Image 1: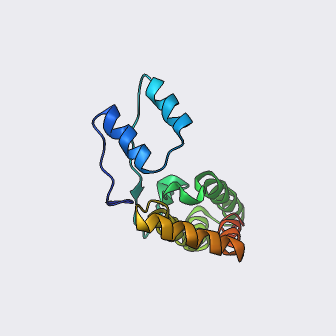
Image 2: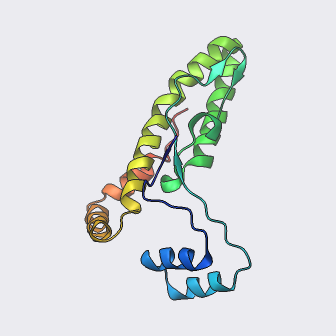
Length: 160
């Protein structure tokens, strides 16, 4: 399992944490709230490989257990709901073994695509320095021509 942001480093102190947030252009009003917080929870985002199988026998993985993805597209719950809908549909049509096979055949390709897209978006969103400026310009231009909207909209369309 590889880190989504290879430059990520867990902080050991509030000062380090605040410096990292300042470096990321955090609005000062948010920094003030963080300064008054009793506890800070510092977490990383992990990137997972696409699993080759989601089921064995009559047991199947769904949602994040099958296809955990970085949060940059906000698709975790949506994909879990689509999994549940697809699985219910296939179980109502076929015996368990066939239903699980068809479920995987339908759901694995779109979730693998979303995992890759989220990984790429995460790499873009977590840029620093000149990379941040380039990213901001790229997102602005892509937004104006409608690419950004179509990326997010396409990830919401059901594939069940």
